[in-house]
Image 1: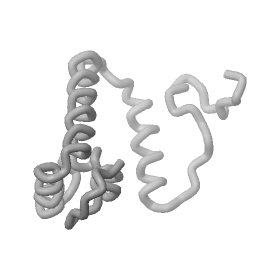
Image 2: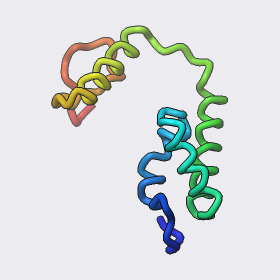
Image 3: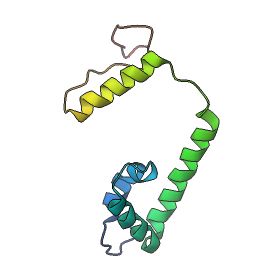
Length: 106
């Protein structure tokens, strides 16, 4: 998506890092760049508003559910592996009751 206008920060960069912006997981200077981009690019602002609304809806509807400790540990372990650049086996991390690999038929 792009409005076709030139921007200091490209639309592709903004959209590729939109969730990092929404979750405030980026440096303040990058957040400022994104805010400036939204001020001048209505298609990206619209996409941001939509994703923000979805995030709020998910939080409202699902934010009260407790996550099993072992599932959280498995997910965080996979995130750590990915961040470290390791290959991660294809498994269903939601299958907390089994150490067997998930198959396509499940």
